[in-house]
Length: 275
Image (cartoon, rainbow, N blue to C red; front, side):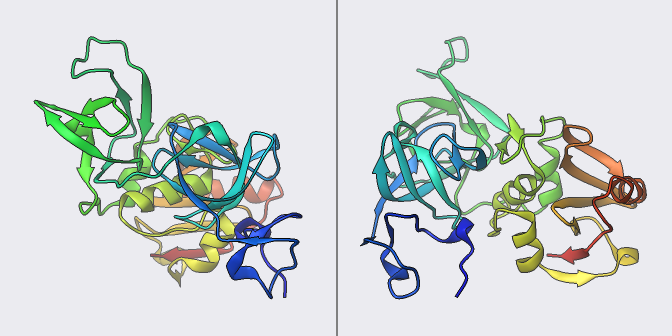
């Protein structure tokens, strides 16, 4: 049996216990549940390797191995596997709210004139300990504007609007935040904000999300796929996508994108999916 290494929690030394009998490994472990304690943390294919994805604050990460400052494990929300710097992981907390803005600052107290101490990005799950006026104190000790948070049981209903919050964000391979994001990251974070599960990479998204529709019937909220690329349909003959042509999240006429992408040698549209 062939396993997709991106979502198979195993390396040359260790594997998740549930894979025993399916994947050969010297050792099988249940792992230790941690969470991302930083604004974001790069997930890499090997220690000090190239970024393949990111965790954002509050994301749960099941650590199977700790070695030379890196933790190997699997993200809970999408099953993506890789290496994360140990120092960016923390003990898990119970989340009560999520960040509903593209970015919010952390402050040491409930005062916007204080020096900010960090940031949190869209989708980050936090635990609110108490509210002080228009501010919320989080379990990490920081304060954020309450208006930038929503309870976990309240989600958005327009993923294109959530993707639009990232308009102008720089393109970043493997990125998942307003600071830098790639095409499949833009799809995933927008769907997460709407309470919908979504795999990490565009080929996984094409295989697992929605039902096929024709190009002629494409409407707002549909996904357009090429080999290795995905875009949101934002309106009549218009798409919104993080792309290397603009090196940013940008709007582009769909008809022009189809011609441009095929002329660049990346092939035709492979499918339109309606979620």
